[in-house]
Image (cartoon, rainbow, N blue to C red):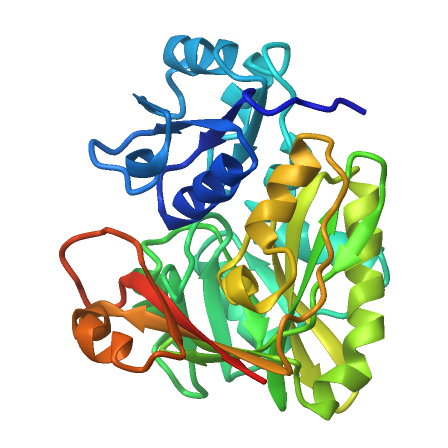
Length: 356
């Protein structure tokens, strides 16, 4: 177990809003953050001590960055894995590279969940157009076609209904390797958010009930309704097994469907997660602070609720332009990510409201 003292430098791969909030939490604990991202403008860099602009596959630039850090973490799970093996000797990487490798491949991710006792939607690998016919024959329609790699917030996906022209769906995913998933009949969506320390200790936050609109998270509420809480123990047990199998350090999020037959695993995110943004004001210790604590070898903080009920609302696109009206409600905690131009489907910020 490695404990880093305040003043140490935390490297963060990725320059978006998750890196921004990690950097704020790290600064409050006395750490410096160094952002590495390919974009010229980084909202995380605005609140960090250092910023290196570089491609994730630029070994020389990546190595120089890593040599300046005492520990390295991720705010973006689609960082190419192979170059990371070249910087492992420069600084510890938390969570481990293996967790990224699993999360970047939807097929591997589903088998990993199943191997540890989880239930997933029925699925079939689609490597070419002919395989799409076979997949639909096996799992039926309606179904959803998802690219095996990349894609989030509804991107890289095409929803298939009975009788659809499959050529159109194959074009929609640009002929990329995919997984076809059968639809799951569910009552609610929820996520298990845990933090695992270097010593193996695991703590869970209250399970949030998640509502999505157009494939993008809209609202997270904790505590969740009784139907979700009845499935919480099974979902937490699976998430903990997966974390332990990966020798995971940091915050891990697993998303689930609550069904009549129990929790169905959807996907995992090896990082802090949008459905945990409410923890900044709504928990004794936020997911961002506990991620920093874990990767720096510090004792983990209390994950209990700070109020009887907590709501988090994402501000998507032009919703963030209404910031003045949002602030007129003194109970709203407003977080804007500094992205400038609002666009449809773009996460611009969030508000959190505590109910006592």
